[in-house]
Image (cartoon, rainbow, N blue to C red; front, side, top):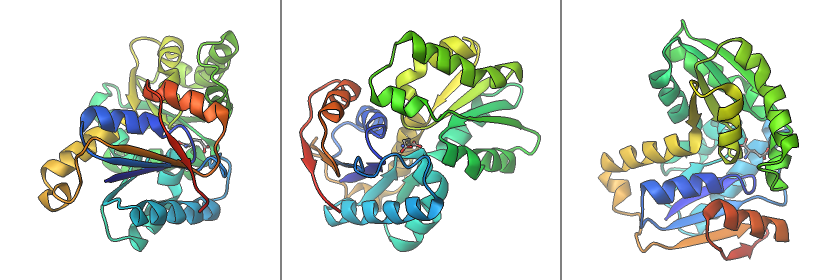
Length: 261
Ligand code: DGL
C-alpha cells in the first residue's frame, strides 16, 4: 500500500493525483483532522505529528510514504526519514524541479502556509539548483479555511486570492508553485488572478509523477506495493463538512474511518 498523510483534507488532492498517475495501486490515507491546521504550528509539533502519522500508516501496511502536507514536508522530512526505513516522499523537491524546468526568466513565486513560507525551504532548494534564480514567496493563511468551507468560487475568495498574489504579480514571476495541499482546488482562480502566461506548478501532480518515476527504477519497492485498486481513508476527527468536501475533491463518495492516534 502507498501511505499518504496530511494535516486534514487537502492531501486528498495528492491522493487524486496518485490515483490518476498510478491506477490500481492500493492507497491508505490518514487526514489528521483533529489536529489540523499544521500551517501555523511550531516545527517541533509538526515533527511529532508527522512521526505519529507515519507510524500509523506503516502499522496498517504502508510500504511507501507520501507526506502530502507541504507544511510537514517543509519541517519534518529529515526526522521522518531518520526514523523509518522505507521510502519517504515529500512534496517539495518535485515541485521545485518542475518549476525550474518551466521557468523562462528564472523568476519563481511560491505560495503556502505561514510555516512553509517561513521555513524558506522552497527558496533554498530553488537557489541550490539555480543560484541565479529569483524567488518571491507569500504566505496565504486565509486560503486553507476558505477551501475547507467549500468557498471555492465565491467572490470573497477571488478578492483574497488577488490580494495575496499582487506582490508576486508586480515582481513579474513567470512560474508559481502552489506550495500547499489546498491550493490546487483554487487553481482556476489563481491562474486567472496571476495571469494566464504564468506557469502554475501543482505539487500534487509533480509528486505523483515523481513516485511513478521512482517506482519504475525501484523494483524492490514496486513489488511490495499491492495493486487491488483499494483506497482506505482514516481521519482523527470525523465531521460532516469533511465528508462533503472529501467527496468533492475525489469526485466520488468515500468511506471514512475515525481513529485516535
Ligand atoms: N496541509 C497543509 C499544507 O499543505 C495545509 C493545511 C494546514 O495548515 O494544515 O501546508
